[in-house]
Image 1 (cartoon, one colour):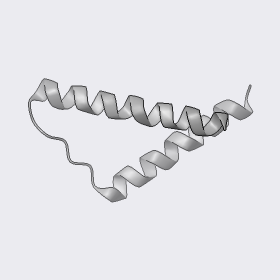
Image 2: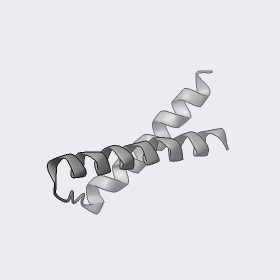
Image 3: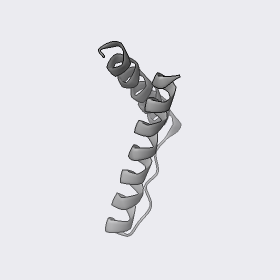
Length: 54
């Protein structure tokens, strides 16, 4: 459960950073699904590694 929560936190932080970047440049950011899905998997992988290394 800790890995899931940490992974969700990383995804939320990533979305906030993207939204801030979009507001700064004054446009929209389009991320294709074939890039977004590996990024989500990467966030959960990093969260799982952090949980295991405790």
